[in-house]
Image 1 (tube, rainbow, N blue to C red):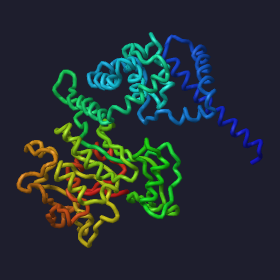
Image 2 (cartoon, rainbow, N blue to C red):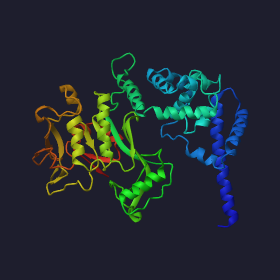
Image 3 (spheres, rainbow, N blue to C red):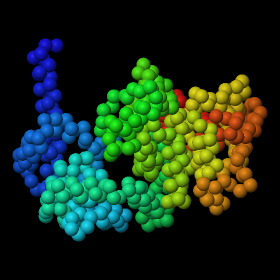
Image 4 (cartoon, rainbow, N blue to C red):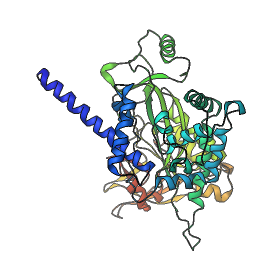
Length: 462
């Protein structure tokens, strides 16, 4: 490719990037005043974009990369301003706003504006304080939606207020508010009836971790020992990022993360930063509880800690199944903990290290000459529904060891061979206590969990 062609391609990319950024600016300007014409909005958007790009030549690139992403179907006919106003009227959101505003003192001025800007960044914006702040024009629709808030007189005061708000309040308060809001799904009724509006809410949940790169160099740190490498990582991260660590994942499905010296040829992905583990409802798509930890953190340990906190804050949380990848199925203790302590069925693809195949069974499913047998009946399975009915508190074992060895009865798929009886124990199957016959009966579960193929009491990758 000639030098002229390269310059032409760069020019084309820059023009495309500038056009996309301008379209975003026009959309924001139109939201501020719906009566403004398109030509007037475009003219004002060009002025704002030129002003923002003056101090940073890479502004368009950064602006597009920080755009909020969503896989949800685009909504139509919904006013964002009216939605914000309705959200601010909710007692839970009003509390978190007042909680953030309480960070300041009288000599620092009113801190309602920085707190409202932070909330708008959280729900409807991007991680850009200055661009979000300019929507709060006195007398504008956004200013009305947030209750005509006031703030410090200078920009330096606003940034100081924002830093103080983030330093003085723990992020766990967001989990408390989130759970209070999610309870509205469970309590909601179909208008005019006593039937729940969301009968399957939070019964089937999924869990997964996402690596988040810190705002530092992602080049792996080499050192002869772990301690020396950790020390170098802390120096690179700085004093304000004590949680940053480097991790790499080897090639292969379900590989455990490692913080040993990196092997470039056998690395599938690497990250210097954090790991965000989230438990999500598969029916509503809402996050339930989450935990941010170093990139080298153990996701199974994080789930155990999150479940303990979740059931303290919401003792009657209706989760029955927890879906995850084979990383979570690589521990018998973890799977047994879910069932024995909370009555939750683990739905994880069988990890290669845990698979157990013999001449007469595959991972606990008996075989006959017609193939894998079908599960027809279970005995004494103490799931979350029965635990709540019997008054067993979350985190406690059922009385007298009940439910520790559920009996399973099988039958031939052709109804010819005699069906045996087996027992779920910690030693004879790779994923004990998971997937009773209820999963086969529930079609929504099979639709939502389409990435795995369910057998009567196991999950296998297709």
